[in-house]
Amino acid sequence: MPQQGFNPKARWDRHIPEQNNSPQEQGLDEKIQVLAWFRSGKITPCEFIWNNKEYRIKQVTYSWQERLGRDIISYFSIDTGNDLYQISFNNTAFTWRLDKIL
Amino acid sequence: MILHIDMDAFFASIEQAINPRLKGKPLIVGSRPDKMHTVVCAASYQAKALGICSGMNSREAFSICPQLQFVTADQSKYIWTSEQIHDMLKIYGFRLNYASIDEFRMDILNHPQPTALAEDIRQRIHSRFNITASVGIAGNCLLAKLASKLNKPNGIAIMDDSNLEPILARAPVDKLCGIGKSTNILLRSLGLETCLDLYLKSPQFMQRHLGKAGLNLYAGLHSSESFQEEPLEDNQPKSIGHSYTFPRASKNPGFIKAWIRLLSEMVAARLRQKSLESSCVALWLNSPEKGNFSAQKTFSRATNDGYEIYLKTLKIMAKMSLQTPKIRALGVSCQSLSKAEYPPLLIEEKRREDLIQALDRINERFGEHTVFPAVISLSRKMQ
Image (tube, chains in turn yellow, orange):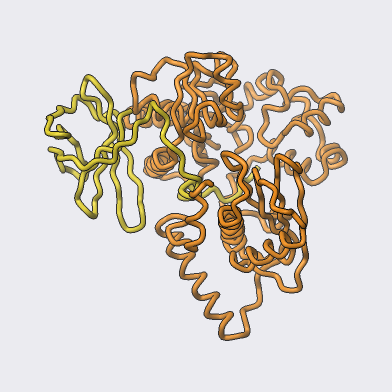
């Protein structure tokens, strides 16, 4: 059966009503400082500073990207050994943010 | 030969890759953050083993398994991963297309080692994303898709002349793509219980009992040609529509109109993609107080402009005499579709068409809804 026009870029979900985050996914959206490798076209965060405390990143468990207008945002889920965080890098503004604790 | 790659519990697997503490646990991905008032988009295999499945409401899922883990869906991760897998598969050099966000089809022609190829693909996906895929290999798309379900999760199945009929004899007829509930009931009333029963029927039988859909099904089962990348001429849809259910009922007119505008723009975009126009617009609404109600109207001029479709739906709504009930769900659809063949005559119409085409090119390049009418931003303000 031929499939009709699947478009992976369809993002109508951006218009769904705003809701509060569930307790498990505490939204933070705070600016942070990050030490990262930029090599071979890849970004690998190594550690970050949040609220004057240093966090060493043990593992980047996943990474993905999203385009928001002209900005490309690179997301990383990172494991510090104690907690899991999601951080993001805005390739246009060149800023890092701590999105949420997972 | 077609290779059909089907990701295993795609959304749930990605969430488990992101958060390894969720691995091995029953997990659901919900469409909305409120875990008790949402629908299951995806369930991990551990959750599926307990009887939890996509489409179930979350309250029911939690009643089956109170220890269920819950994550809110985040389309950006799934779409990005899907695109990366698609790009990875292009490297093999075969004709490739999407079957859905988590399924891919590859025409591997007469590749001498299809099973080894399938295994290589699965290993690459797992190595890069830490998620698994199941692969089906068969002579055509429909059978390859059926084969991909046979050894799920994390398996490969090949259907060829040596095992085709025994495999089809074990597969219930509703396992075939395109056989829904009502078709399943009809086929079973005709004594057709398995895919083999269907496979052995003549095209005349299929047409007599299922019409054109039956002929398409026969062709799908028996085809030995590579898949069509372009839609067939006679596959023009009869209607195009979109609908949405709100998290809770609303009677805020600005919010409701924003959603009607968004749905109109989505319908119009699909009409333009297929070079179609519509002269008949339909609007349906669902209210907790009044249930479902709908109306449609045929206009003298066909259109594929989202704003014009929106204005037509407002005219339909004005005649509905709603007396502002709360609205829980709504849908916009366009019928009486025809080919968009005639260019606009008036200067203002030509300018508007040029604007719409420019916006389509931007959204094609950067993703749907990169540029959209400002009023649609009210769709996020639930009141």
